[in-house]
Image (cartoon, rainbow, N blue to C red; front, side, top):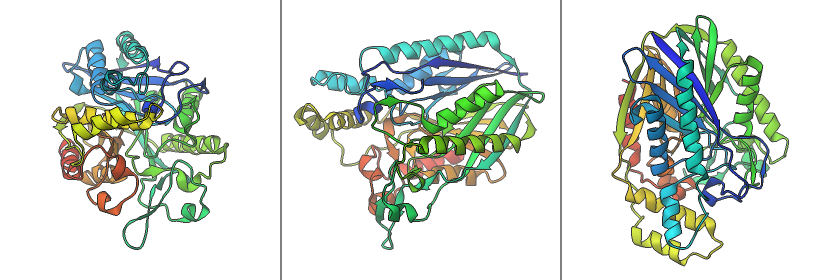
Length: 427
């Protein structure tokens, strides 16, 4: 028998706390609360599995491992059977205690994290998971569905005739000519998996690949349009809904986002419409077993990164250059942990349905690769796991130019390693 339970805890930062590792202004208002939302699955005779989504920008390196370890201890399982992901709304936290410790040692406090707030909310999430064990209920089948999302996703990298990046579609794109360029490579489908007892839904998971941000750099905390649509569905149905962002590293709403303030509500409505349509189209499948596969990988850092140069950036940067300090500390943290493996995992719900859990801010091509590896199956993909890697681009991206290779923490050699791991966990 398979049983499940869900948990949720508040992870809204206090006023003044850094947002997005200090890359954006700190929190000065909360428009909508942020949550850690999790699902616990337990099959008889096997250790539990935990899937957790955080309404945060990112979570990286040691802090990612600590989240998995504390949730695992809470439910009595192994850390490798826990997947934690961020939705990647920008005006939200990005905890990395190891990187902040480096900055503290060089006289740069409160750049990435402030105080012990991140540790406290992690402990509260683990306590919520413990309490959820008393609410385990039978789960007999799943319902899977998908729907096309109307006018949200577009590829950020607008290519020129020379095969190089000619323009970038950011979170918002005021340039009408750049917005007019084709959508480019995307995955237009939102995928939905409901866990049910008979035909009664117990919890619904949603997966879609896009930078879920209509405005950023505001200091106003919000889970953005994907979190707002998720909350709306939960209120309508009376059951938990959990949203996971897919491989959105090179996908934004830029083609359809001219920066008008009410676009957040417009995109919320479009995501909500797709969620409803995916649920309405869903068909039932047996939930006869759970199979969890793991491939630990080490992705090589960018070849031009060195401890000496990164420490020099931290020492020599002006006091008000928070993003410079933050980025250098995050890169140095990854460089120092490069030999500690990162898990690529997959939850097989039956022979025809699988959920792939990936690290990093991965390009959409990895999501499409996962789906192509199992063309006979329904494959949902969650990205934004361990963000120690930063962007995981394609090898060719470094020659094509653009923003992401400059901000990637791992090298072009990462592509074949990650592709192989994805194929392996899906076998």
